[in-house]
Image 1 (cartoon, rainbow, N blue to C red):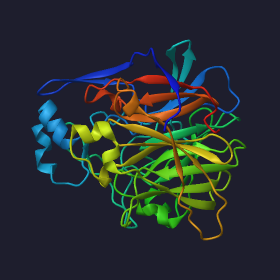
Image 2 (cartoon, rainbow, N blue to C red):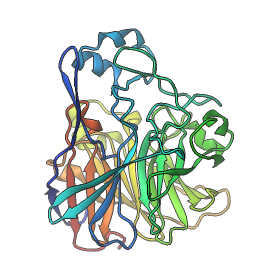
Image 3 (spheres, rainbow, N blue to C red):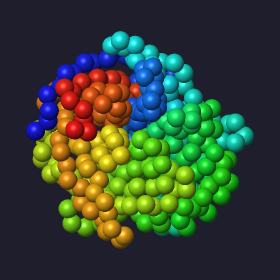
Length: 386
């Protein structure tokens, strides 16, 4: 049973980026920042760091039905194909400030390569058995792949002013300095050749097995241990080819080298237990996702598990694992949006503001379908790690 809590919606207005006049109607692009949320350790100023994903993108069927982009119809049969209406709007870190019950935008920090140019959100080249999503522009032309491209999904903020960011394409982990420049990208061992020509160093230090991610279901969640020595990385879904009850690997890595230190298995709930999603239509195991993970202390993680309408937060204690052992984690429910129907869909970012206070954010997907970003403050009577 979830513990008692107080919920407050925080005031926020999405920031307009551009209006695109399309055949059926106008697409209104707004700043995307709801994929991940973080607070720098020891920072009590109310500063939050957020990240959006690759940039504005839309499934082809929605682009055709909602915006009349019939030029995309010849590509409808391509697995995972997306419209990228503005390739120039790419991954960025957003600095925010909590002021009372409002969220204020401070600045947007584009992720850049070593030559100072912003990276794109275009798919990286395929290879080594890894599938990539086809991407198309507004004219129905294929977008070129980009070895520097990234589909960013989560971040942590280190005490020295730098960041670590995870993304889905590789899947990979990027070290980012305080100015937004990528200083290193870690990829699964044996896949580094696909990123030849990237505008930053690339090293194949992650477990080779990480390359077996499902299409568009790569690294989605990232946490930093309180001593900043370890990273906890989670896939969005169970890896390609996995069998049995769906579980998501939790990789504990050295924050300095990327070396694998331990692996855990996070088990999903039954799809029908996500009540608002089940009420909206049929749900199955393919719909289950992990969208965020936060370290509550050195032994406890908080995991955001969701479908679309319903999001649940579970605390999990990390047992000591023997070499080669992959313990299945036991879950304790902390919070469910099924208990607070006014919280909208697509909750993806979570930040631990204090031991008893969380900030949640929904992902508006850059406004491509008209969604708006929501920020929520959840206050508990006792520490979440208790």
